[in-house]
Length: 86
Figure 1 (cartoon, rainbow, N blue to C red):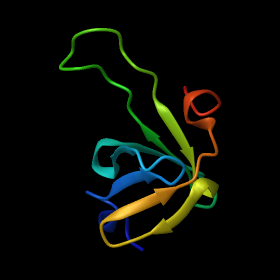
Figure 2 (figure 1 turned 60 degrees about the vertical axis):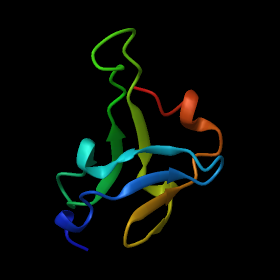
Figure 3 (figure 1 turned 180 degrees about the vertical axis):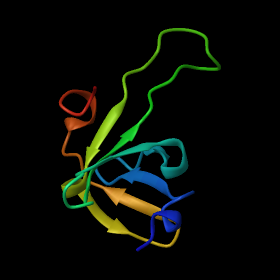
């Protein structure tokens, strides 16, 4: 799969069905030796620049369950509010 094919896909958490973000708005951590994707980093941001900035969410590549034509299903097993924040 090409990197350009990821753009625009929604990231959905399998545990609660919550929309986590979109690949086009994220960064990827890539292993420089192998070129493999280690994780997807979704920016936390804030509501229109107001209020407290939320932490970034780091989704390990091993947490991806399925990559479909329009979305990526991830299973974070409750880690989404603690261990995966950066």
